[in-house]
Image 1 (tube, rainbow, N blue to C red):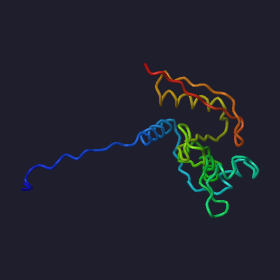
Image 2 (cartoon, rainbow, N blue to C red; image 1 turned 90 degrees about the horizontal axis):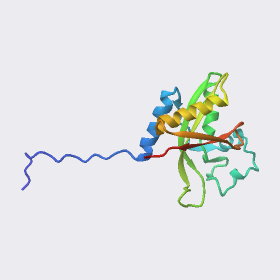
Image 3 (cartoon, rainbow, N blue to C red; image 1 turned 90 degrees about the vertical axis):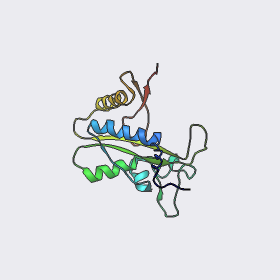
Image 4 (tube, rainbow, N blue to C red; image 1 turned 30 degrees about the vertical axis):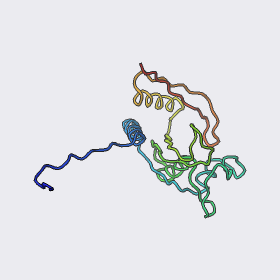
Length: 177
């Protein structure tokens, strides 16, 4: 028989996915540094995803094999969060901007251990007077220390991206003992 006077079972609580926890920590770290989180749309116009970012019509990144296009002309799933930068700048100009742009991006790629058709990306945008490349380097180095611990080291190397100049790629090194 069922005894309704017995205490109920303690529910088992789940936890947040590691990706959710990591993104929330990224938001917190950048928020502590004065950046706001700006969410942009996953379905984007070609104009924002490519054209306004200096990807002309003949650029290989626009290839049908790389981009998920919709049945509506010039509407696609974003291939990067960079299009959100245009939205942020148009919304807040001429005021200074300090924003991070997180979100899912979609690319048609061959699946393997390092590639998936959908993944998360976080971009950092700072626009204002007297902001230098040194500010970028300092911000990213400080982020790495706050995110991965005081022993985290960063290295920067010049790189080419068609929509930014100058450009660099950043690597973070952290050994766990």
